[in-house]
Length: 332
Image (cartoon, rainbow, N blue to C red):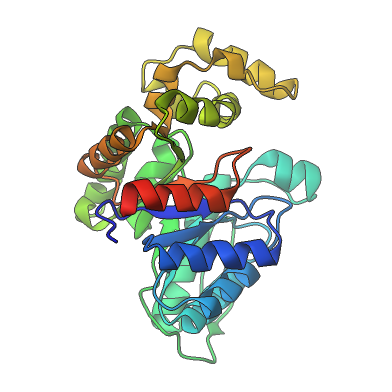
């Protein structure tokens, strides 16, 4: 068994613990390079889930994609991350993102202020506290007194990824992050767009852009019947096109506002516009088709600069079945 694409597997945080453990152990057995745990609200907490995954495995990297800077103070996130890295013996990839106003302000009652700046400061605090063991920080959003860790982190260079998608946030990732986790609906044109923004940020502060790793989520389904595979991902494509709306992640592909807005309206009405998703749109925004088609897409993504593509579970498809099928047709 081999994994020439450095393919990871990702799943939602709403599964029960028994399912999660089975998925993670199977991912390691099938030689996926990483497993990614989504922390969306109101799913199970990613740190406790990742800790359970760490003690059930020994080799696979464990990504958290993503926590936000608001629900946990960055100092607490640094403590949790360093502890989790020790439990896993250095296999954690920590993803940070801003979340959104609906979850933070409307649902959790937490002010959603300066989200990009808050995410940047959170990353800086976590990296500095873990690498140096002490910190005093004075930022626009976060401030600390003299903070000192009372334990020695397993790694001083625990990788911090930014789960971001807009141009300014991608530039910030280029300045401070070890990696970037690109969102569902990443396409080859968007990879080029994102990498250019990351490069701009890196070069501004004298960093080598090639040192910044790129991971990305992709709805993925493989079947010997290509049409059947593409049909399986159409609902999730409709959902996330609607969620992203008129944003560079879609418009850089050539999609127009006229094309995107019916998907947005569907999401707002609680009914995804699945009937508008063509096979061509699937080919652009997902990894779906027969084994040869999926291998070709993965190869193209690697060549475009996606170091760690992540096959993310698809709505309506049992994730264990998906994992086993991908393993059979792509990794064997």
